[in-house]
Figure 1 (cartoon, rainbow, N blue to C red):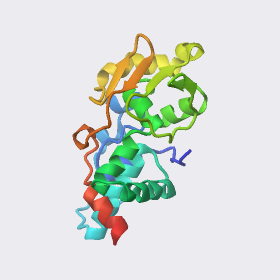
Figure 2 (figure 1 turned 90 degrees about the vertical axis):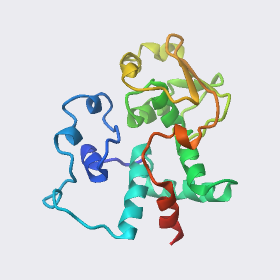
Figure 3 (figure 1 turned 90 degrees about the horizontal axis):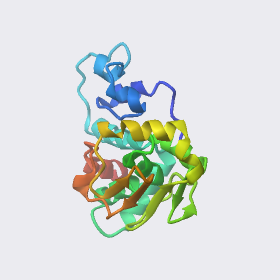
Figure 4 (figure 1 turned 135 degrees about the horizontal axis):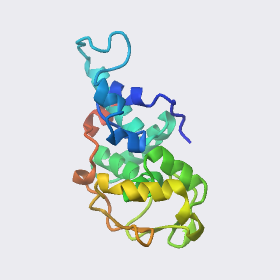
Length: 208
């Protein structure tokens, strides 16, 4: 699992946007980004001029932290996207969106991607009827994700299903919370990615 510091609210403030790393807390007035919407540190409220490299770095860091991916793993995703047909930046986002942990979170069976990774590693889900405990596994069109029968009373999963009304299920996914099941209806298109990131800057960062 990617090593993410406990003070994850600082990551949101550093990237100047909500990354929804603390689940339910991010939707309340306790959210640190809502209370202090500026970068952490003594110079956080200063007006800084960023170089082109700094802007590219921030876009890369934003995507990496949003999906909870480590540096080396993120670079591998970029290398894979660069080998695929299509626009490299778009293919990169598709690979990140179809990760098992992101799909579990997007379907509403976990309150954050970090929590989704833990639930996946603890064997709470089935993919096409088979156990899958690899958070980085990429799902394909037509895959059916299901919460295992013994896991449907797990407090974290039940709480996530109860609070899922606060966020929208992506159009490329279909969720049936009554049956604790979800389906990958299609490959996500660029417009289905809600993260406001300039993926072209990420490509420029790795191509320099």
